[in-house]
View 1 (cartoon, one colour):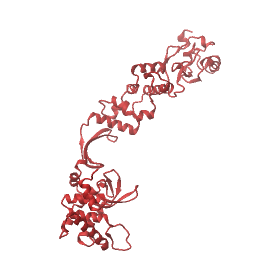
View 2: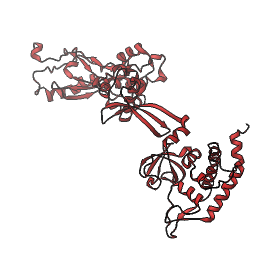
View 3: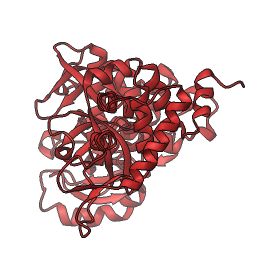
View 4: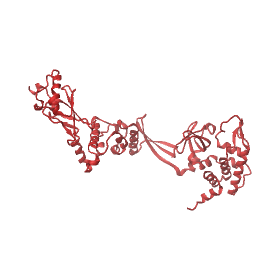
Length: 446
């Protein structure tokens, strides 16, 4: 690959690439002598220090002070001292660069002093463009935070060009910087500036808010409020907030929660490795998976949703069922193999509890199971239900997975304890032969 014309110019200068680019672009902008002086300053050690030998603080970070010292040959502020040997080396390097560029050394200091030091620095270090966040902290264009006492550079400036960084990776600090005008920044980096609409849910305002922003990387250049954000952006903002706070904020009615548990029950008992038909593949419906994929399963059902409260009123039944790859056939399989409710011998339809996928629960008054000898099952007979046999008052009297054994042995102990407490209800000697009922003896005509 042949080097570009710009690359050949950089190579001819014998400088590090960043400083070479600074010099070449500075000459193209008509500031060749100032660019050469600035590159020489940045290539050498700092020529400023505090005059007191006991003062070990770094010199003020304002890069313009160095250019002023270079041009005038003296310390720019009281209390500062100029290292003359360093100044001489800097001037020698700058003179050599001007010779290579075919430039004459300026007859006065004005050309040097009038150089756009901030812009030239920004061209050399575009990844260190920065915006003030606080009086002592900047945000770089990359998003990284660095410390800088902006009062020592320009207490009014919003943007800065940072030349040197020191400190640690966790606590970096800017040691050389110059204030940068926003119009300079926008002209020099126009092709990198993007305008986007940012829409988010504001928990404090309890609504979705939008703004149109112009950014250069992580630097915010301008923003305006959007009155009516696009519906798709509103949905995205609500989903983003939901991913942040968790799907527990959704409308998890008892029916929706049970549906989630039934679907997860099917995945556990009918794994993909055993499936032969597409509709028999049961995707995961656990909390973690649903949270990770909330945009996929909930997003398509949020059309027209504008607020969090609207989203929290949404019935989750259809969004959850829509995740099934087998469509209607698989929904029918769900109702057949993991029914929401079971009809017991008395004729009642009792809602099943699938919170423990290994042992779904049927909680029913024991009188409603009279005459039933085998424990009811789900999953096509694979999984017997855990029976919570209730007293007529609705309190657990016995827990079993073997109904026949209960009728033969456990029932009579329960009858002994409860018959006196619930005399109006039937307590037959032969429960496996008695008519199942949810009624009292009087209403049965006994």
